[in-house]
Image (cartoon, rainbow, N blue to C red; front, side, top):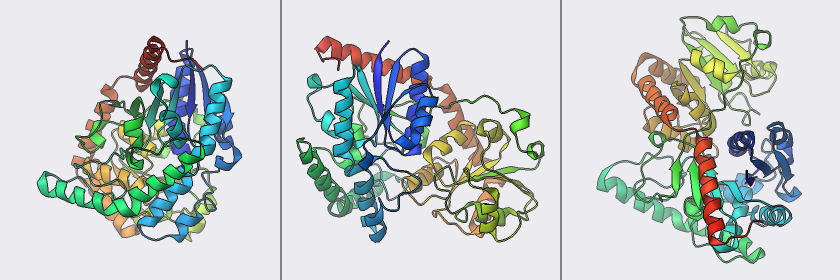
Length: 445
């Protein structure tokens, strides 16, 4: 069996799929070490994997980013995106790289599997392939690659069709170059120089798709815009759908039996990180549907239930059922629609069950996720992270009253189910890369 080093920034949505892959590889006999933040030590160790900590200056709490994102918070317009990327991912390159190379020097690894936003791999990937281990990646966000067939990532615009749409895409890309792409390249080149690496030859949004030896896109093509520029080193493998053991009846909330009903069940969630203010989505959804003939299930992502009551300013509606966490594999088959803030992993988990969505995302990649859900016909995009109850009600009732969203969601679910096990594909890709490197004389390190 082989030894692999897995790398991810300490951001749950990026790390969790990598840990799922690592757990499955470990079960198959491989030796797995995960380099990430100390907050997630127990997540890694609990999955049966070795843990390696990032240096303190790039180890942060993804639920408390106020200080790290201070420059972005003070910016306006597109500068918010630029400064956020620099703060979260560009400035991390030197320390991530140094720790990565220290681990490689101290251990005996066969290959590296990095989450696409682990930017500390950039200097290592700049080495000739004969002087480094194989480096494969997994992408846990929508495709960011620049294309004439799609609007630039971050605009959250659907791709459009025909020459007019392609001209629009070119113009938008050109307009963003001096205020986003070029400044990001300059920032990346400055930190690469700190570790003696040459300037980057690839734009920031294209890096993962052009630099990794192979990139496993943890999604399905039906949920992604076509791009003629997509390299053949990119493989759509679908999400890792980790099936947990059924929760015992004793551990389920007392109201669980209420879900055995012909009344439509609407789940609303703000994920596990964006839960500081439950008034962004959970409270407006409960208000929006309080008088509708639906059962609304809300999960607070670990926050106390009374925090949601405070956000509401009143008692929970009679048709609301709330819990801190719920077993989604048991809950989603009972749902008619999911209202979500648009975390990519949660959206795909929902679609794997064939359930349509109403998406209200405004941070990180969530607007792009919402745009893809609408483009794929799997639900509605509310185009806001803090939607009004009226907009939520209208969208939920539309999804419930028409068959097209559910039919399309079931088609995506069938596509996910028809794919080979993503871990089988990743394991085979790693093995092939190691075999090729061994044949080519790359040293195991």
